[in-house]
Image 1 (tube, rainbow, N blue to C red):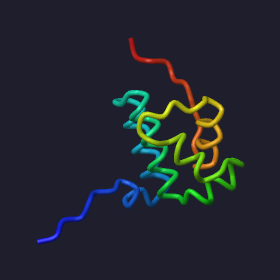
Image 2 (tube, one colour; image 1 turned 60 degrees about the vertical axis):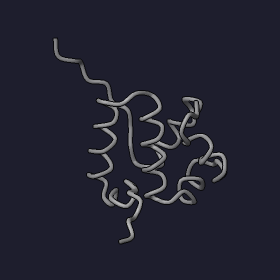
Image 3 (tube, rainbow, N blue to C red; image 1 turned 180 degrees about the vertical axis):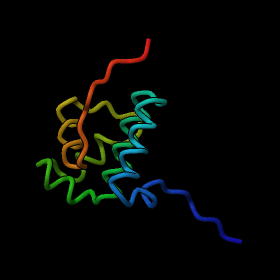
Length: 94
């Protein structure tokens, strides 16, 4: 029996699913998890499309959003905008 490797990008097929996934990672993950999640979302949408919208090359995006990467904040903001996301601050519960 052949097994297939799980790829979360295969399931990120709507804006609602992408938002739910990223919000969960933001709430529960660390910096590395968040960068990886943004990379999976970019892959699901299409790295070429994200590259075009951000003005970054595909290889640069793959490198910036890979495991262990430490991308600049400006890069993260460009990618978030390209994937249709935004950062919003809400007060935390006491």
